[in-house]
Image 1: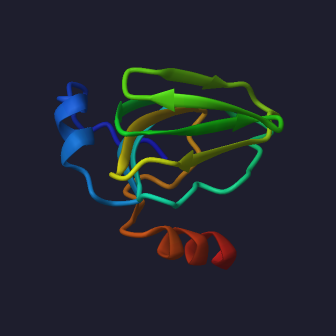
Image 2: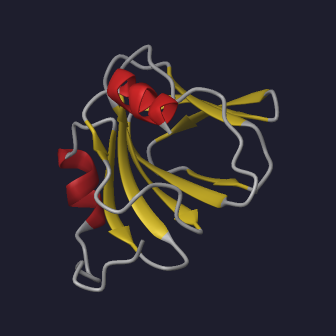
Length: 129
């Protein structure tokens, strides 16, 4: 999964704000992965659980709700959310503009080079696996 040729220094906030894809991997290492996400107004990631993965999300723009084990909390730009392995979670864009964030999975969750332009594209790819 790792790719030593990927850059180790990334202007992450600039890349996050410029990203319009639902999901785009940035760097995939052996133990950790950085992924950009954009959730459109009214959309959500969808409830999920990563049994063997911790996940950290940092919101760069927009606002929404973080739902962790059924408890919803309002979140906005500059918030960091730590999702422990095994915690059911969902992120919902409740604002009127895209919710842009970067997330770190440890260990990696997606194949290196994964890019899904839309949530429906991401959902279709997950059902294929």
